[in-house]
Each structure stands twice: as structure tokens, then as C-alpha cells.
Length: 387
Ligand SMILES: Nc1ncnc2c1ncn2[C@@H]1O[C@H](COP(=O)(O)OP(=O)(O)OP(=O)(O)O)[C@@H](O)[C@H]1O
Ligand SMILES: [Mg+2]
Image (cartoon, rainbow, N blue to C red; front, side):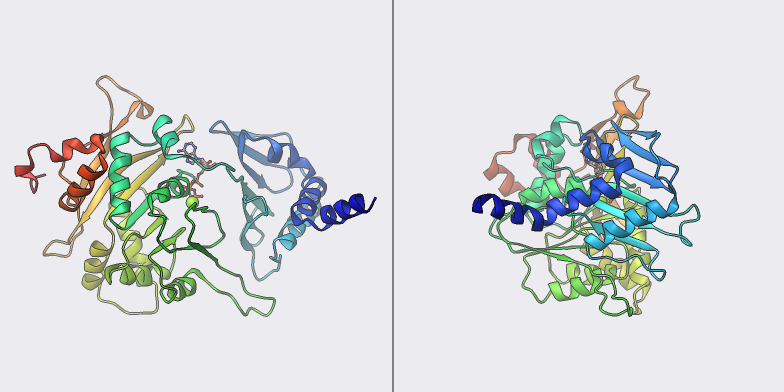
């Protein structure tokens, strides 16, 4: 009896259980999709229009909320549960649910069609590096190349379109970070789940009802520098923190990784430049370009294909700027279509034959670690500096 009572009390105060019940009550119309593991994203565009992503396809469902008030009540409840508030001053809200799923809310007037909510469901298991090769996201050679880059503390930017798998790949490749390192992870709302023993996760905080107390990525980043990090991982770079990041990386904080929305390596560096220029510190453009080119070592471009696969389509090394301060880059892997191939899905990530600028440093480690897939980098070592 006492046991039963104890279990009941534990169940009653277990936040996950309360959350599950709250969800069931308020999110009734989409409950089935939240429970279905093959649904990766649920998109509510106002009460009458609900889409899901399943097996890589966007599908419009028959589900609907009774009316706008019911939807707003559901949103309000969900946010309340995760410590965020629906208030007229903050029509855009990003949050993480107790089960790890990510939720974004856009309210009028920013959303023209009424309350919108997007739920990216949490992939419980994460991916393994072997899975990334098996499902064609990467080839063994590209994986080994990135592995050595991470082990030798190169700074890597994962860029691509929305939902192209940037965060998942970063999360998976982070397993290559040596376990003895102290890693600080900075995110808008926590997604990354590093498996190393020494990880500190920092998350931004919105303002209180008086508009005070907000802590943004930039502030977290500045603080993280004083926390004796071996590596800093910024979940997504998208604002004024870019300049702090670039300057920290230039001054020797190696091995950082971040994601960014950009379609090509040039696009990624240009965006980084624009973001850095948005910060309140004035810096001459040429100096900024020099810093960017020395801070970012590698840009990995990801893409989401029509068949729902997410793949790396390009891996490029960033070289020093030229005399006119233009970015110089060297493609190491690009997507190649097989002969007669017509569809982009048939493309394979292939080594371009270019020598890596990381090669010298890499060489010793590769030999030591026995990564045969990287052998082509060693062929004819006399011409190492030739692309
Ligand atoms: N290699 C992969 N193979 C198959 N599915 C993947 C792969 N990587 C990610 N996914 C799935 O794609 C979806 C988006 O992944 P992820 O959040 O990593 O993308 P993202 O590019 O970081 O998105 P965003 O632009 O919103 O930050 C998730 O549902 C995830 O499970
Ligand atoms: Mg992401």
C-alpha cells in the first residue's frame, strides 16, 4: 500500500509524465503523429492545416484543431511547461520539450496566417558514424578525413539548407573528440548530445516579463571563454556572436564546430562576414576576411535530397585570402555523378584528387591510426603541395 502510494506520488511529480498527459490533452489532434516514430516533423500552420514529414515526404494531414483558441491554448500550455511564455512582445519562440524534441512557435503579427507551431521530433538514438556511411551520408574516406580533422583540432563549419542534417552530422562526428577534453556546447535550445564524459551544455534564455534577464548566444560564448574550454561547439551560428567566434578561433581556440544556413562554402564565409559586421564592434572588411580565412579550416556542405536522404555534398578547405583579400578555397570532396547518371540522388561524394593542406600534420596520425581509406593522400608525396 505504502509502495503503491509512493509510486503514485512519484508518477504525479514526474515532469515527463505530466508532460505526456498535457500533450495528450492539448495536442490531441496531432498526438498520433507525435507517437509515430516514422514522422520526423509536425508542422501546424494555423488550426486547419497540419503537415507532417514522413519518409522524406511532406504530407498534408486531415487533422485539425477545433479553432484558433484551442490551438493557442495548446501552445500556451506547452510553452508554460518548458518555462517559456506566450506574450505579445515575443511572437517567435524556440523551445525544447522534455523528450528532447524542438518546438518553434510563430504568432501573429509575425505569422500572417495565425498561430504556427513546428515540432522537430527528437531522434532518440542519434546516428552512429557507421550508419552515416551505410546510409550514404558520407564515404569512408570523407569520414576518415573529417575524423583526422577533428582529432587535429581543425575548426569546421557544417553548412546547408534547413533540415539538411547539419546538427545530426555534427553530433555524430563529435564522437571523434578525445574523451579527456573539456567541451562547452552553446545552443539556442539544446539539441546536441555529446557522449564524452566532460561536457558542459549552455542554453540561451529569453527575457522575463519585464524584458530583462535575456542571455543570448553571444553572452554565453563570451562566458565560455572564461570556463577553460578545450573545445567550444556553437550549435548554430546566426548572429552577432560570429565576430566573437571568429576572433576566438583566430586566437587559438582550435577544434571548434558549428552549423550555419548556407548553400556553398563561399556563401558560408560571406554569411559569417555579414553576421560579424552586424556586431557592435567596427572592424575593417579586409581584416575581417583575413580573420575569417584563418579561423575556419573546413566547410562541410550538407544537402537534403528528394528521396529524404541527407548527405554531405562537398568538403572544402579554406586557404589564406589572396592579395585582394578574396577568399581562396580548395575542394577536397565533391558530389560526382556516375557516367550516364541523370539524377542528383545517384551522385557519390568523391575525392577531387586535391592534396589537403592539412596533410603534413595528418600524415603522422594517419599512419599511426591505420586509416587505409586516406592512403590516396599519401600517394606520390613529392607533389604534396600540388593540388
Ligand atoms: N544522415 C541522415 N540520414 C537520414 N536522416 C537524417 C540524417 N541526418 C539528419 N536526418 C534527419 O533529418 C532531420 C533534420 O536533421 P537536423 O536537425 O540534423 O538538420 P539541420 O540541418 O540541423 O536542421 P536545421 O536547419 O533546422 O538546424 C531530422 O529529422 C533527422 O533525424
Ligand atoms: Mg540544426
